[in-house]
Amino acid sequence: MTTQLTPREVMTMSSTIHFRIDEETKRLAMQAAERQQMSLTELMRQRAEELAAEERRYQNSEHEGWLETQIAQAFSRHDADEGEYISNDDMESRMNTLKQQAMRGKREHQG
Image (cartoon, rainbow, N blue to C red; front, side, top):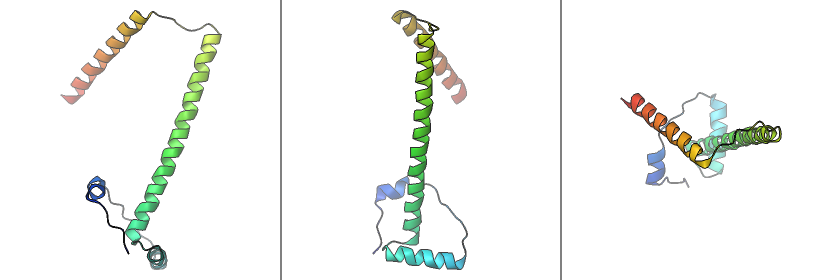
């Protein structure tokens, strides 16, 4: 029995992977897929999705490590009294200026 894809799953697929393997590897992989009642394509898609999920977890942990470092550095600057403290109004003004610059940059690149 093979698993049927929903129309949504088919629509979200936009890439194809082609690779070469020797005949013995292909034969054994096909047998493994049949034993799991899947096509070789379905099994390889599942394995690729597992690899992608593993990479997402890795990248997230890398980001978490980076974020922890940034937080530790911010506290170190605070403890060393190296911070710059501004009023809420000043912060709002600076953020609005940055947002306007970003919007101008977007429009220039879209042109």
